[in-house]
Image 1 (cartoon, rainbow, N blue to C red):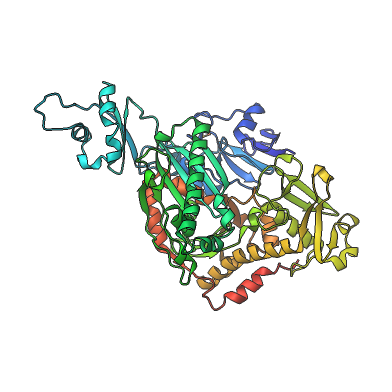
Image 2 (cartoon, protein in one colour):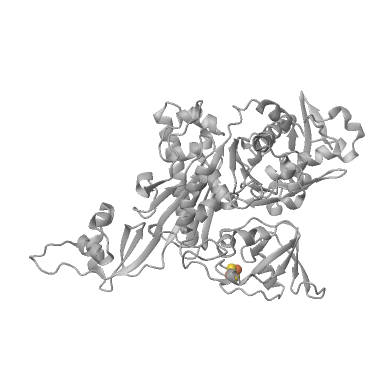
Length: 619
Ligand code: FES
């Protein structure tokens, strides 16, 4: 399967239009160059300039990358501008090449505050080459570290003990000097020779189900590598409550959870270093986001009371700790920054989503929905901000679904239903299972075809009225109602793939959690859904879910399509923004303080809202 890319080379002139069929996974820049269309790529396609910018004029705009955020900025990103080198279309799109920007947007970012458009890079990690005058005379009244501290203008006490061990050799090894790395006025490393160009950081999003680690170059924001994997704590419980129950009042089990996540993060560090050729000792800063429970467990804090009413977290403030305290194998004195928490079930990940989506800006009311096992909903504007947790469970990530799987090769990620079921798989390989986006399409299609009714019941009794292709897929086996999505051997599937009645119920619970979260915040704010100016869908949800299917099953309100957009893994993007900008990290604390937490279960109207949200909207 290919994706149709239409390039408007000179907008308004029909002959200056090129249509290219591209293979999935190809960036717009690569596709244009392969087709012989000149697109300027000043930085060589590394997301470090704005020369390759395009503007989307038709089709779904892919989520912004950190390169888009840094180089173009939130306002242009929202207008549909993207960097062609960072942007991979997933469906037919039309883009305008190099549309003019306002002059201010052409500034190369990275030079400090005051730059308009993108995120001004000020990671706080500074490197400088210093020549240190070593003690020469035997009657000296000084030391290596005092000489170093004097050379860089800080107190010797600001040089941590961990740096002292390698100091004498480093200072004497290279007459050209040493490279001193500092963060917020504190020395993190002293290295022999000039290593000033080696300055990297990690953005880490610890989700209940998935963990994503991204390595960025701190001077430019260039993404060097990114890895994601399942959270290995999941063997001790798929959702937060079962994870908390496992650790509750049992230090041994808490240690197991802690060890699992630290072990995974160190694997991620090794992997991003392997992919990029960066040495772990050059990683000086990490920003971690995650829900309150994941945050506490990473720090080794007992989360027991997060799971007991009134669900109070142990701490909420932002925290900076040395990497070695968390047993993370970065530069030993690297700083790990944990973003602030709002409440027991509205964590640092929600703060990161608020930051990445800029929901706290502007007059228009916007909604951000982070869809995940422990999702969150945010509603607000510059005026007020509300948030609630929306614990969807793992169904959207393929969990607790008979043939569910994550959005990996072989997962059915798109389904259309006419007189039969048509599927598409990631990687266009034989179908192994169904991921969240496929599940949504499947149920939306079955609703339209009348195979599932508004209560979620698979209509076995009414199958005679269905088209023949569909009819034979609707079955009862034992007591169980099923829809056979693929028979063994169909489309090369090695085994039968079915949707069971229980799968539909799991999806209803999951979408009910999200939909009731949105409905409750609107209810608390006293505004009708139609007043929502924009609804942003966040989360690493399989591939990208179909917005039409999300509306059809009632996961999100039926707003006009141009008011709904997918913003990708906004929690990870928020962490990346805070990694590159200390100003944004400070803003995270302000935003967290502004968010008003709404406890769903404690609200007298919640039960009715949840029951309504479980049902599917009528046709
Ligand atoms: S070529 Fe420089 S950002 Fe794409």
